[in-house]
Amino acid sequence: MADRPRVFVSRRIPDEGLDLILAAADATIWPDEMPPPRGELLRSIEGMDGVLALLTDRVDAEFLDRAGPQLKVVSNYAVGFDNIVVPEATARGVAVGNTPGALTETTADLAFALLMAAGRRVAEGDRYVRAGKWKTWGPLLLLGTDVWGATIGIVGFGRIGQAMARRARGFNMTVLFHDVMDPPADVVAEIGAQRVPLDELFSRSDFVSLHTNLTAETRHLVNEERLRSMKPTAVLVNSSRGPVVDQRALYRALSEGWILGAGLDVTDPEPMPVDEPLLTLENCLVVPHIASASRATRAKMAVMAAENLLAGVRGERLPTPVNPEVYEGR
Ligand code: DGY
Image (cartoon, rainbow, N blue to C red; front, side):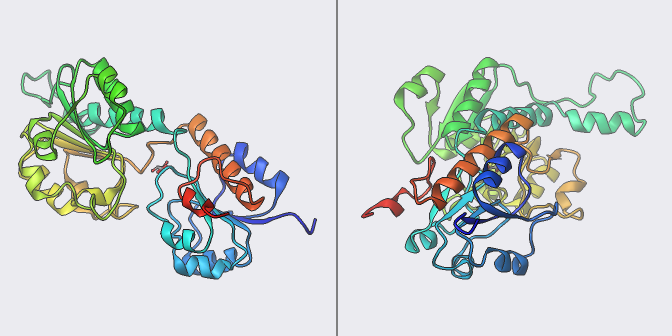
């Protein structure tokens, strides 16, 4: 039908969202497992009314200009949107959507799994057994850091940081947090969390878990100085964005014993190259950006991203806009 909106979907997403899109729009779906190379992406979005983008697609001035002035919406299949230069979209009247809430608990589950696995050396123990090194029960074998009753420092106390804190309270942990925004006082009180300056958070915590957005201010927030201030028994967990951690400093921290271990869901760059020095270290646990990767959550994200996309191409307000200022004066 000629009047159906034209949309580009930059990867296959779960059918729960894809079916909604196919029912309402003329959709071109990038079919490969790998993202469209830049040139293909730019060619594919020309003349589209809406784009469903992934965090692997950079949406900048070049992208928006190539798409053309009819573009109404970019719907990101993620809660994070550091892949999108939002002011450029707003300046062109393009609404940007994301998927807040859908992945909160699933992401906190994985962050807590990394915390426990890195603290108790689970992946390292598995490799030890498979390598045939397990000869006897050993009083000093693979000693880790206790989780129960420990102190956790949460950097970024938004939805996911708070969900992490609730898990931590279930393990009788003392919860410290830092955020540049003011979280609701009732949530802070209910969790029994204590707001502290960043330096204090790093020096007091047995586990530091990162849940902040990637911005100019948070890039390399975890640097040599902060890592050196941590306890030698402490563990760093990152399920936010890779560049929040200075990986060269983290390598030194882990290889020289400034801290006990790290659990990373996100890296800089992604994918992490196989010759990355961190991968030579037993005390660095890395998984491939899978914090939101449960079937149910990815389906929920697909529905949210589809609903944002379809609202946008119809000229309606997105259910979850990142740049509500785009509606000002309309
Ligand atoms: C996000 O949504 O930002 C995660 O990193 C991927 O689910």
